[in-house]
Length: 119
View (cartoon, rainbow, N blue to C red):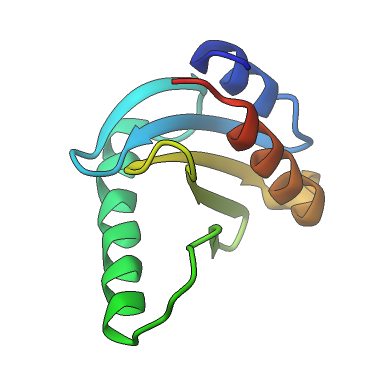
């Protein structure tokens, strides 16, 4: 099991990674971050609302499944939000340069790190 600092450092090794964080979705607070290029405090607060909205919608629809990840595609960036399965309420957040990244590999890496992270 890896700690927060090690896990975020490993996320920064993903091709095209700009920055990443571990976020407490209930409060929107950043528990750890690495990299630069995005105001992580502001992004964490906003993306906490995105996760809550999606979970509320899933509940309203009666979906009996887990939210694996959320992908936000911008003109020059990918934003991957992955709620932690073992630590409910927390999520990993990774920002990638769209031109320098492989989205499939990045999603897989975030999943692997989420599974091995001990908080």
